[in-house]
Length: 106
Image (cartoon, rainbow, N blue to C red):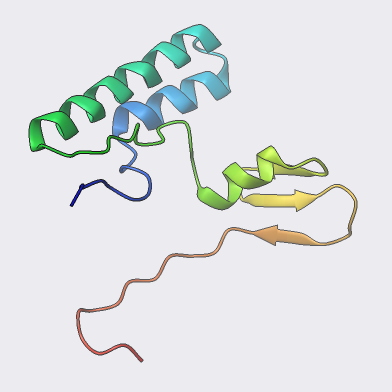
């Protein structure tokens, strides 16, 4: 049975630093893209080393999942604190993550 991973890989410090530098105009887009390609190469090499059958690129270009999808939709824009609709008077903010102990589900 083939093995793979599901979801994004954790965002490394290098990814977060590169994203912030791009946003501040400290690096060019081409440099940012190259940094993401380097991250992808590392993720793929790790999967090959572990013997994973179906490789994924780890989605380094994705920030917060909700923000990422909002940025892909017409009529929405992302802010530092969440995302908003341009056409509605409603503001949606990112949900906070919660953690559960390994026990029974409520």
